[in-house]
Length: 390
Image (cartoon, rainbow, N blue to C red):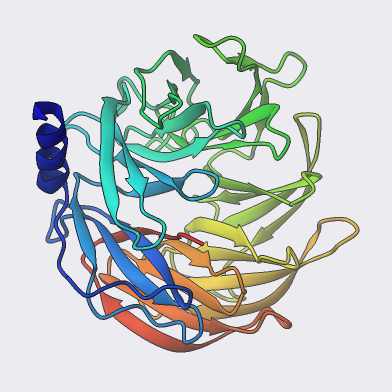
C-alpha cells in the first residue's frame, strides 16, 4: 500500500491537469508540445487535436512540469514518450538529462517513469533504435569545452531509461570560429533497417556513421570501418536527417549554409547527389536550415528555413532518383520555426514558432503539396517541438 501511495503522489507531483472535461475519442487525438522553460512555459503541454478541422483545443488537458523538454521522441505505437531536458551551464538546472513517461493513448495524459543524466550539456535531440532497446541522445553543448557528444541510453522492457553506457566524441572542423571550435552533435537517426546510426555534427561539418549491434549491450555502436564519416562543405553545419521510406535516399539540412543536401544510401554509405539552397532568389537576409520532414505519402519534402526568412519550403521528390525539385514556399507567420509536424492525412502542418511564442496550424493540399491558409494560432511561450500521438 505504501508503494502504491508513493507512486500516486509522484504522478501528482509531476503532472498537473488543467481541464477535467472528458477527452473526445476518434475525432481528436493527443498533441504533445515541448517547450523551453527559462521563460513562461512550464514543460510539456498536452492538447487535443481535431483531425477533421485541424484545430487545437483551446486549453491543455495536462501540463507536465519538466525543465526544457525541447525534443520529444515517441515509441513505436505511441505508448511511451522520451524527452531531452536541454539543460546546461547558466540555467536553473545546469545538468543535461533525459526523461521517460507512459502515455495514455485515449487521453494523451503522461505518467512519469524515470529520468537519467545524459552525461553531456544541452541534449537537443534523441531517437530510439528500431528495436526500441536504445535511446540515442545528441548532447549539443554550446560550450567549446568539452563540446557535444553522442550518448547511448539503454531502455528497459518497462520503458524505464537506464544509465548511459556509451559516449561517442567527434572532432570539430573549426571552419567557423564562432560556432565550430568544438563538436556539436545536433541529431542522431537510425537507418530504416536499423543496422546503422547517423550522427549529424554541426560543429564538425560531418555525418558520423556507426554500425548498430544490440548484442553489444554496453557498447552497441561501432564506427563504420570503410566510411566512418561523411565530410560536408566547411561551415555548412549539418543539423537533421530523414530517410526516404525505402531507405535508398537521405535528406540532411545544412543549418549554417541554409541548404538541404540529398544523398543516395546503401548499407550505411552515403553518396552526395544534390544540394539546394532554401532562400528565395535575391534574398539578402540570414538563412538557417532547420527541421525537415517527408509528407506521409513520401512525395514531398518540407524544410524549415529559419534565420530571417522564416518559411516552410516544399520540394517535390523524384520517385525514381530521390532528387528534389522546388515546389513552393510558405511563410510560417512567425519567427524561428524550431520544429513542425504533418498529420497522417497530410492535410495539416503544425509549426512551433519558438521566438514568436506560438504554435500555428496550416492547411495543406496532399495532392499538390502546397501549404495554404492558416487554420489557427495558439499562443505558447518558447514552443520547441510538436508531436501527434496517432
